[in-house]
Image 1: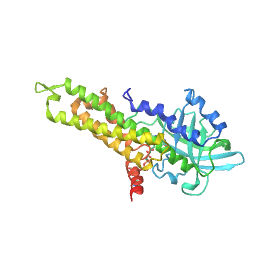
Image 2: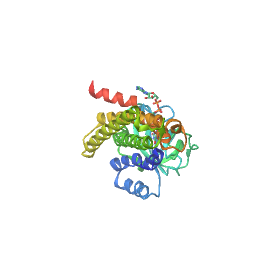
Image 3: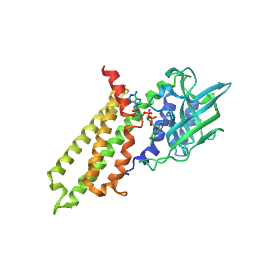
Image 4: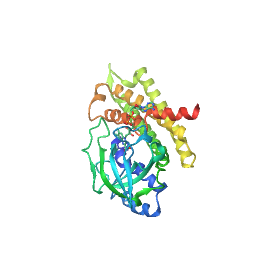
Length: 301
Ligand SMILES: Cc1cc2nc3c(=O)[nH]c(=O)nc-3n(C[C@H](O)[C@H](O)[C@H](O)COP(=O)(O)OP(=O)(O)OC[C@H]3O[C@@H](n4cnc5c(N)ncnc54)[C@H](O)[C@@H]3O)c2cc1C
């Protein structure tokens, strides 16, 4: 994130959401086939859960994988997939069984599979350096050997994976806010208005003090949750809180940073302008703010 580009982080980071299900659920043979080349930077991996019909309601996904002797025949499509244009392999959620959460499996699908195709790079508000694509499956024959874990048990793998994805998004949000804060502090010392630096106005100082406080609190909370996850303590509720809190902070801090920069904050080429745009996806990707609140309320009520 020190590079100042959330898109750069997202494009490098697609492997951080695509590989953990293979690590957790895969056989030794699958790990040998699907991990080393991605970790060596020779292949690109993506995670494909979201479909054109919806991303929040994962249990309702419609891409089918019908068993045909040693293969699954996969039909359907995935939407808004990070690194989708360039991915050599995707960790893909498919329906192998009944309607609902109990009919979902995870398959690794290689992009060279006949019937696999990809849209143009989609145009986005932010994250320009990360490609996002629609992926289509037209009778793709995927070896049964590519199934991760047990058939129809994929939903639990997806939910487990969300915990680390949400942690990553909280960290990206905290760093987005941190960078916006640092740029604002610097600018408030340099920029003059009415013959004085911006920092000489109490309104600017207080705004910066609020921004710094929110960033600090959010980071410390996220670190606490990260330490618990590292100690293998389930943090489903807490990571949902951390993601929402961090995104609220980065929403507010990037907005205020643009305000402090005045008209230049709206101009391409300024870091705060990019942070403001790149930030917008953080409260949508990996589970929206509303879905995080649904999860939290299930725990507290
Ligand atoms: C740049 C980018 C990169 C992405 N990368 C990936 C990726 O790599 N892999 C992947 O699988 N997906 C990816 N996504 C998809 C992302 O995870 C989804 O956009 C997200 O989960 C929301 O799904 P949706 O867009 O279909 O919105 P919908 O599910 O249609 O939701 C629309 C709105 O309704 C609200 N809503 C829905 N259900 C409820 C409810 N029960 N209660 C209250 N409100 C509700 C939502 O919060 C949202 O505000 C990416 C998206 C973007 C924009």
